[in-house]
Figure 1: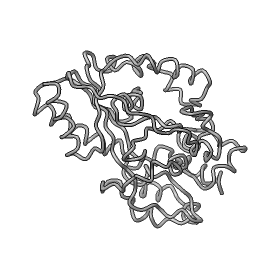
Figure 2: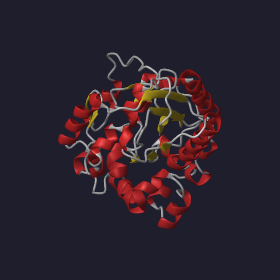
Figure 3: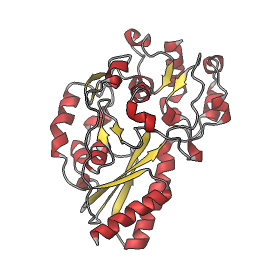
Length: 305
């Protein structure tokens, strides 16, 4: 029954469009506790104080779903068919090209969970897409979806790392997958390429130096000493992924919701600099770029201009 149900879950996930699906036992993540605690003690979370809250929930899925037995980890490709113009232009991270992934994936997760219930029967659970204190990369690693690279991102040997992660935590007893081998080897391309030296060592990121943090989560002015290293990035950063050899295996997504609007594709450097709040709201309606807000984006543009 466990095997049949697990195969069913994976088949439906694939039909809905998820790239990978792995399953692990819902338990306390003892192996992550010290690492995460030390990372917080170093102050590497910057101003993201929400990471310090709900410490137990982040490590124990049964705190989020009482009676949980399984964590279903899923990935969803966002590698774009075509990059936005970056030559002599400002750059935004590929994940923000289209509609906010939280909205897109939540709908697909709900559809997946409904179909699982229809096929298997009444089960209790919740769906998550970067929406609760979940150590999602740790669960994806345990579920065999990929390994954690030196840039701290999950890497899949067939897909690279340009994908979103999502989870279903439920009380369904399933067959569990095994973690896969870490295949980074001696490669340090991501560490060497980071212009702000944010990767302090393998799998450890100092958010205070990370361009993604500085241009999105950070609400203060970007430190003067780092502005010259940000290049033309105004929302997020993909450098440590772009240089990763495993991303040579990335294939373009076929999700129409992730295709950038024509107005965004047409923006030149001059247009970004002259961007008004009304135009910002029009172009980025329903976009992840809204997270930094208009003033935050203008701050970023000013910092790199």
